Amino acid sequence: GESVGLHLPTLSVQEGDNSIINCAYSNSASDYFIWYKQESGKGPQFIIDIRSNMDKRQGQRVTVLLNKTVKHLSLQIAATQPGDSAVYFCAVRGSGTYKYIFGTGTRLKVLA
Amino acid sequence: DADVTQTPRNRITKTGKRIMLECSQTKGHDRMYWYRQDPGLGLQLIYYSFDVKDINKGEISDGYSVSRQAQAKFSLSLESAIPNQTALYFCATSEKGPSTDTQYFGPGTRLTVL
Image (cartoon, rainbow over all chains, first blue to last red):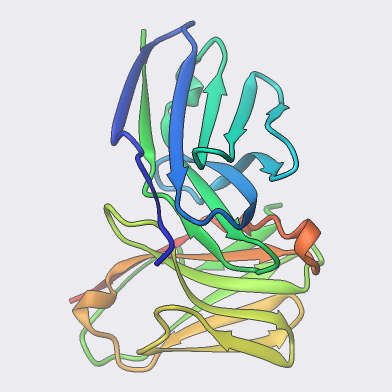
């Protein structure tokens, strides 16, 4: 079946450094990808998305890269801040469907 | 005010009890979803509704039922709660159409079944 994985369970970075969080997916027909941030005790919060016809998209301090050849997705956070501490996970949608497969997430810890 | 609200935020109940979790949204979205989140697992879809008269089972619907009372309201029921239904439950909404299908989540309900 479809899967989303290869998250590191935990990533620790120094405040001010850049963070890179990765996600791999199995369905080559996936057409839409979302990164969510989930803080403790809260619901997942939309960060940034990308469609399969793009390979890079930038937001405020965040960049998502999509490599369809190897079915890999990454989230880059520039100048990581303490408020970025959370679990980050990707959601991958099959082409033409409503259905998402969600990754298990990487817990980002920002060290002062 | 939050766009997607869930009540209650926390609930402790006993095996065999009937429980209802409620979700309301002010985003004006047609589509609503119920997910559960367990430690170490990705979100799993329980039920989804594309409009008031369209309700569908997700991948783990056994033991659950839903009701779409209005465009803005979608409730999840556990008819007879069991301990392995202890989890975080999230409601989500999205706009109609595959090109605008970003899902937005509520704050969650932490359910404990003793």
